[in-house]
Structure formats: structure tokens, C-alpha cells
Image (cartoon, rainbow, N blue to C red):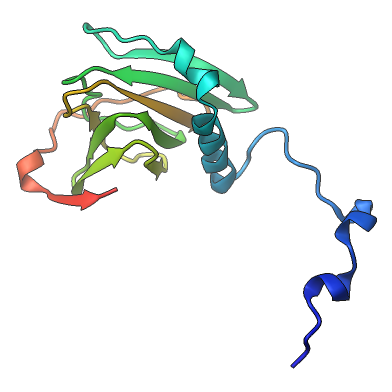
Length: 166
């Protein structure tokens, strides 16, 4: 067995600058979009001062755009929900920044605590609601940017599905 580490074999990567990959200015993979959401979530000073709560409707604010994607900040007071919907041709990442949300699909109901993330592909049908007694804040990244959000008539019955931890 060879006891040399990869670093000893390859040498110091910082000595060969031409081999370093530049950091992407904008994400282009699911993992990079998840990473972007996590980095925004970690920088509370960037989003917390913008949050507002509206008892009549869900509040939302476009936080950022990039080539082909959008980042949205949403707030949810107790009892507010999205209704059963999909995101058309967009994929996305949902990250709970504060509070607790519940995601309902045909197959499961998931409690999403602060820090929880859900990744979805085009055509993914779900409903997000604030079933708690406290306000919640979430971050949504859509790629490509959200152009439609078709609503679905059938409701997901919470009692008819299993509860799955986030």
C-alpha cells in the first residue's frame, strides 16, 4: 500500500495556478443552486431586514436574479399557504430560513423546520403552508426564472398521507 498522500504525489495545487478552476459567478447545477441557497440563508444580514409580514396575502420579494434564474424571499404568517401548484418548466430549491412550514404532496406531508431544503423538478406538484403558530420565512430559487405557477384543483388531504421528517 502506498503511504504517500495525494498532495505529496500531486504537489501543492496552489503552485500550479493553471489547474485551479475559477469559481463560477452564477450557479448552473442543482448542487450549486442548493449551495447558493445555503450561502444566502447563512447571511441573515442580507435578507432579514427585507422581510415583511402581510396578514392578507403571502409577502414576496425578488432578492436576486442571474442568468436564467431568480431568487425570491417569501414570508408566511400562520395559516397562509400556496395552494396546490407546480412551477411549470422551472426547477427549484426551497429553503426554510425561519420558522416552520409544511409541504404536502400526493405522497407525503413533510414538516420543514428552519434550514430544511427541498429540491424539485419541472411538474412537481405540492402545497406549502404555515401550519405553525409563528411566522415563517423561506427562500426560493427557480431555474429558469418562474414564468408560470399552474394551480391544481385537487387538494392534498393532510390526514390521508404519511408524515415524513424533513
